[in-house]
Image (cartoon, rainbow, N blue to C red; front, side, top):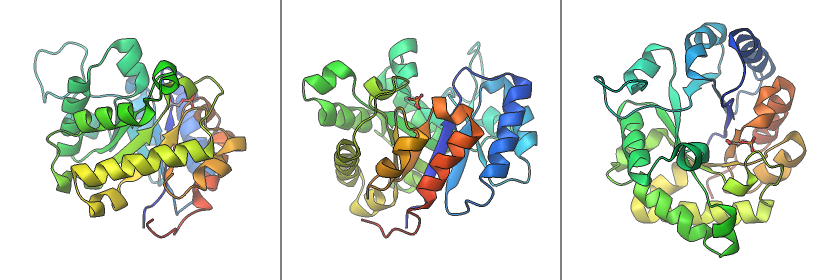
Length: 259
Ligand code: PGA
Protein backbone atom coordinates (compact mmCIF):
# COMPACT_ATOMS: atom_id res chain seq x y z
CA UNK A 1 0.00 0.00 0.00
CA UNK A 2 1.20 3.50 -0.74
CA UNK A 3 0.04 5.99 1.89
CA UNK A 4 -0.92 9.21 0.07
CA UNK A 5 1.36 12.18 0.75
CA UNK A 6 0.13 15.78 0.59
CA UNK A 7 2.63 18.57 1.18
CA UNK A 8 2.09 22.31 1.51
CA UNK A 9 4.96 24.28 -0.03
CA UNK A 10 4.58 27.73 1.49
CA UNK A 11 7.48 29.13 -0.58
CA UNK A 12 8.59 32.62 0.54
CA UNK A 13 5.26 33.42 2.22
CA UNK A 14 3.91 33.97 5.74
CA UNK A 15 5.57 35.61 8.71
CA UNK A 16 6.17 34.06 12.11
CA UNK A 17 2.68 34.75 13.50
CA UNK A 18 0.71 33.85 10.37
CA UNK A 19 2.88 30.76 9.78
CA UNK A 20 2.27 29.48 13.30
CA UNK A 21 -1.47 30.15 12.94
CA UNK A 22 -1.57 28.36 9.57
CA UNK A 23 0.32 25.36 10.96
CA UNK A 24 -2.07 25.10 13.91
CA UNK A 25 -5.11 25.36 11.63
CA UNK A 26 -3.73 22.64 9.32
CA UNK A 27 -2.98 20.37 12.29
CA UNK A 28 -6.51 20.77 13.57
CA UNK A 29 -8.24 20.35 10.21
CA UNK A 30 -6.11 17.36 9.16
CA UNK A 31 -6.23 15.59 12.53
CA UNK A 32 -8.90 13.16 11.37
CA UNK A 33 -7.24 12.37 8.04
CA UNK A 34 -5.21 9.51 9.44
CA UNK A 35 -4.82 7.74 6.11
CA UNK A 36 -2.72 10.52 4.56
CA UNK A 37 0.79 11.72 5.40
CA UNK A 38 0.44 15.51 5.60
CA UNK A 39 3.48 17.80 5.55
CA UNK A 40 4.10 21.54 5.57
CA UNK A 41 7.22 23.23 4.20
CA UNK A 42 7.56 26.69 5.78
CA UNK A 43 10.43 29.14 5.22
CA UNK A 44 13.67 28.32 7.10
CA UNK A 45 13.46 31.05 9.78
CA UNK A 46 10.14 29.77 11.10
CA UNK A 47 10.97 26.06 11.31
CA UNK A 48 11.58 26.16 15.07
CA UNK A 49 8.40 28.09 15.87
CA UNK A 50 6.34 25.85 13.61
CA UNK A 51 7.90 22.70 15.07
CA UNK A 52 6.62 23.93 18.45
CA UNK A 53 3.17 24.70 17.00
CA UNK A 54 2.95 21.20 15.45
CA UNK A 55 4.20 19.39 18.54
CA UNK A 56 1.91 16.45 19.32
CA UNK A 57 0.16 16.68 15.94
CA UNK A 58 0.49 14.20 13.07
CA UNK A 59 1.79 16.78 10.60
CA UNK A 60 5.28 16.28 9.17
CA UNK A 61 7.50 19.37 9.22
CA UNK A 62 9.64 19.88 6.13
CA UNK A 63 12.10 22.43 4.77
CA UNK A 64 12.18 23.85 1.26
CA UNK A 65 15.89 23.27 0.65
CA UNK A 66 19.15 22.00 2.16
CA UNK A 67 22.85 21.96 1.32
CA UNK A 68 24.70 18.70 0.79
CA UNK A 69 27.75 19.36 2.96
CA UNK A 70 27.52 18.56 6.66
CA UNK A 71 29.17 21.73 8.04
CA UNK A 72 31.80 24.34 7.28
CA UNK A 73 32.41 27.51 5.27
CA UNK A 74 29.21 27.60 3.20
CA UNK A 75 27.74 31.00 3.99
CA UNK A 76 23.97 31.06 3.95
CA UNK A 77 23.54 27.32 3.57
CA UNK A 78 21.72 24.87 5.86
CA UNK A 79 22.68 21.20 6.41
CA UNK A 80 20.48 18.13 6.82
CA UNK A 81 21.57 17.85 10.46
CA UNK A 82 20.45 21.44 11.12
CA UNK A 83 17.02 20.66 9.68
CA UNK A 84 16.68 17.58 11.88
CA UNK A 85 17.84 19.64 14.85
CA UNK A 86 15.01 22.15 14.17
CA UNK A 87 12.42 19.36 14.15
CA UNK A 88 12.12 18.90 10.38
CA UNK A 89 11.94 15.37 9.00
CA UNK A 90 11.35 16.14 5.31
CA UNK A 91 12.83 18.38 2.62
CA UNK A 92 12.19 19.37 -1.00
CA UNK A 93 14.88 18.98 -3.65
CA UNK A 94 14.87 19.95 -7.31
CA UNK A 95 11.91 22.33 -7.09
CA UNK A 96 11.49 24.10 -10.42
CA UNK A 97 11.91 27.52 -8.79
CA UNK A 98 15.30 26.39 -7.51
CA UNK A 99 16.21 24.90 -10.89
CA UNK A 100 14.94 27.74 -13.08
CA UNK A 101 15.00 30.88 -10.88
CA UNK A 102 18.01 30.14 -8.67
CA UNK A 103 19.84 28.10 -11.34
CA UNK A 104 20.43 24.76 -9.61
CA UNK A 105 22.00 22.12 -11.85
CA UNK A 106 21.10 18.44 -12.07
CA UNK A 107 24.38 17.69 -10.31
CA UNK A 108 23.51 19.96 -7.36
CA UNK A 109 20.03 18.42 -7.14
CA UNK A 110 21.67 14.97 -7.06
CA UNK A 111 24.04 15.93 -4.23
CA UNK A 112 21.19 17.44 -2.21
CA UNK A 113 18.94 14.43 -2.80
CA UNK A 114 21.65 12.01 -1.68
CA UNK A 115 22.44 14.14 1.40
CA UNK A 116 18.75 14.24 2.37
CA UNK A 117 18.22 10.49 1.97
CA UNK A 118 21.52 9.65 3.72
CA UNK A 119 20.34 11.76 6.68
CA UNK A 120 17.03 9.85 6.79
CA UNK A 121 15.00 12.88 5.80
CA UNK A 122 11.92 12.25 3.66
CA UNK A 123 13.05 13.72 0.35
CA UNK A 124 10.43 15.10 -2.04
CA UNK A 125 12.35 15.21 -5.31
CA UNK A 126 10.62 17.51 -7.83
CA UNK A 127 10.85 17.02 -11.59
CA UNK A 128 8.93 18.40 -14.55
CA UNK A 129 9.11 19.93 -18.00
CA UNK A 130 8.85 23.56 -19.10
CA UNK A 131 6.18 24.72 -21.57
CA UNK A 132 8.71 24.74 -24.46
CA UNK A 133 9.76 21.22 -23.65
CA UNK A 134 6.13 20.09 -23.46
CA UNK A 135 5.33 21.69 -26.81
CA UNK A 136 8.31 19.89 -28.35
CA UNK A 137 6.93 16.59 -27.01
CA UNK A 138 9.82 16.17 -24.57
CA UNK A 139 7.84 15.71 -21.33
CA UNK A 140 8.80 12.11 -20.68
CA UNK A 141 12.40 12.53 -21.84
CA UNK A 142 12.88 15.52 -19.51
CA UNK A 143 11.34 13.67 -16.57
CA UNK A 144 13.55 10.65 -17.22
CA UNK A 145 16.72 12.75 -17.55
CA UNK A 146 15.97 14.67 -14.33
CA UNK A 147 15.16 11.45 -12.47
CA UNK A 148 18.25 9.58 -13.60
CA UNK A 149 20.49 12.57 -12.81
CA UNK A 150 18.96 13.27 -9.39
CA UNK A 151 19.00 9.62 -8.33
CA UNK A 152 22.49 8.70 -9.55
CA UNK A 153 24.33 6.92 -6.75
CA UNK A 154 21.23 6.49 -4.54
CA UNK A 155 21.18 2.98 -3.09
CA UNK A 156 17.85 1.10 -3.40
CA UNK A 157 17.49 0.81 0.40
CA UNK A 158 17.55 4.62 0.63
CA UNK A 159 14.39 4.93 -1.47
CA UNK A 160 12.11 4.18 1.49
CA UNK A 161 12.00 7.89 2.26
CA UNK A 162 11.90 9.04 -1.34
CA UNK A 163 8.82 10.80 -2.77
CA UNK A 164 8.77 12.05 -6.38
CA UNK A 165 6.76 15.18 -7.21
CA UNK A 166 5.87 15.56 -10.89
CA UNK A 167 5.35 19.28 -11.32
CA UNK A 168 5.04 20.53 -14.90
CA UNK A 169 6.71 23.94 -14.73
CA UNK A 170 4.01 25.58 -16.89
CA UNK A 171 1.39 24.55 -14.32
CA UNK A 172 3.08 25.99 -11.23
CA UNK A 173 1.38 29.09 -9.92
CA UNK A 174 -0.33 29.67 -13.27
CA UNK A 175 -3.81 28.30 -12.61
CA UNK A 176 -3.23 25.78 -15.44
CA UNK A 177 -3.02 22.17 -14.40
CA UNK A 178 -2.22 18.94 -16.20
CA UNK A 179 -5.32 16.94 -17.05
CA UNK A 180 -5.82 13.87 -14.88
CA UNK A 181 -5.02 11.71 -17.92
CA UNK A 182 -1.78 13.61 -18.65
CA UNK A 183 -0.74 13.38 -15.00
CA UNK A 184 -1.49 9.64 -14.91
CA UNK A 185 0.51 9.08 -18.10
CA UNK A 186 3.51 11.03 -16.76
CA UNK A 187 3.36 9.29 -13.37
CA UNK A 188 3.13 5.81 -14.91
CA UNK A 189 6.22 6.56 -17.00
CA UNK A 190 8.05 7.93 -13.94
CA UNK A 191 7.24 4.67 -12.18
CA UNK A 192 8.63 2.70 -15.12
CA UNK A 193 11.86 4.73 -14.95
CA UNK A 194 12.11 4.01 -11.20
CA UNK A 195 11.72 0.30 -12.01
CA UNK A 196 14.54 0.54 -14.51
CA UNK A 197 16.84 2.46 -12.12
CA UNK A 198 16.07 0.36 -9.03
CA UNK A 199 13.56 -2.51 -9.23
CA UNK A 200 9.86 -3.09 -9.73
CA UNK A 201 9.45 -3.41 -5.94
CA UNK A 202 10.97 0.02 -5.38
CA UNK A 203 8.88 1.47 -8.21
CA UNK A 204 5.70 0.05 -6.69
CA UNK A 205 6.42 1.48 -3.26
CA UNK A 206 7.66 5.03 -4.03
CA UNK A 207 4.95 7.66 -3.88
CA UNK A 208 4.66 9.85 -6.97
CA UNK A 209 2.69 13.03 -6.25
CA UNK A 210 1.41 15.76 -8.57
CA UNK A 211 2.04 19.48 -8.22
CA UNK A 212 1.01 22.50 -10.28
CA UNK A 213 -2.10 24.55 -9.52
CA UNK A 214 -3.60 21.77 -7.42
CA UNK A 215 -6.78 23.25 -5.95
CA UNK A 216 -9.88 22.04 -4.09
CA UNK A 217 -11.85 21.93 -7.33
CA UNK A 218 -9.40 19.81 -9.35
CA UNK A 219 -7.87 17.66 -6.60
CA UNK A 220 -10.44 14.92 -6.59
CA UNK A 221 -10.07 14.11 -10.30
CA UNK A 222 -6.26 14.28 -10.26
CA UNK A 223 -5.80 12.34 -7.04
CA UNK A 224 -8.21 9.58 -8.15
CA UNK A 225 -5.73 8.37 -10.80
CA UNK A 226 -3.99 5.12 -9.89
CA UNK A 227 -0.41 6.41 -10.08
CA UNK A 228 -1.10 9.82 -8.50
CA UNK A 229 -0.29 9.25 -4.84
CA UNK A 230 -1.00 12.72 -3.48
CA UNK A 231 0.06 16.27 -4.18
CA UNK A 232 2.52 19.08 -3.61
CA UNK A 233 0.47 22.22 -3.13
CA UNK A 234 1.76 25.79 -3.41
CA UNK A 235 -0.77 28.63 -3.50
CA UNK A 236 -3.67 26.63 -2.08
CA UNK A 237 -1.58 25.51 0.90
CA UNK A 238 -1.69 29.04 2.31
CA UNK A 239 -5.36 28.45 3.21
CA UNK A 240 -5.86 25.70 5.79
CA UNK A 241 -9.38 25.14 4.47
CA UNK A 242 -8.31 24.71 0.83
CA UNK A 243 -5.27 22.63 1.76
CA UNK A 244 -7.30 20.28 3.92
CA UNK A 245 -9.92 19.86 1.19
CA UNK A 246 -7.07 18.54 -0.96
CA UNK A 247 -5.91 16.30 1.92
CA UNK A 248 -9.42 14.84 2.14
CA UNK A 249 -9.44 14.22 -1.63
CA UNK A 250 -6.22 12.21 -1.14
CA UNK A 251 -7.78 10.32 1.74
CA UNK A 252 -10.73 9.32 -0.41
CA UNK A 253 -8.42 6.98 -2.27
CA UNK A 254 -6.70 5.45 0.76
CA UNK A 255 -6.03 1.74 0.84
CA UNK A 256 -5.80 1.50 -2.90
CA UNK A 257 -3.77 -1.61 -3.75
CA UNK A 258 -0.42 -1.06 -5.40
CA UNK A 259 -0.97 -0.80 -9.14
P1 PGA B 1 1.20 25.92 -7.06
O1 PGA B 1 2.70 25.48 -6.65
O2 PGA B 1 0.28 24.94 -6.36
O3 PGA B 1 1.05 27.32 -6.54
O4 PGA B 1 1.10 25.82 -8.54
C1 PGA B 1 3.07 24.13 -6.59
C2 PGA B 1 4.53 24.00 -6.23
O5 PGA B 1 5.34 24.84 -6.63
O6 PGA B 1 4.93 23.05 -5.52
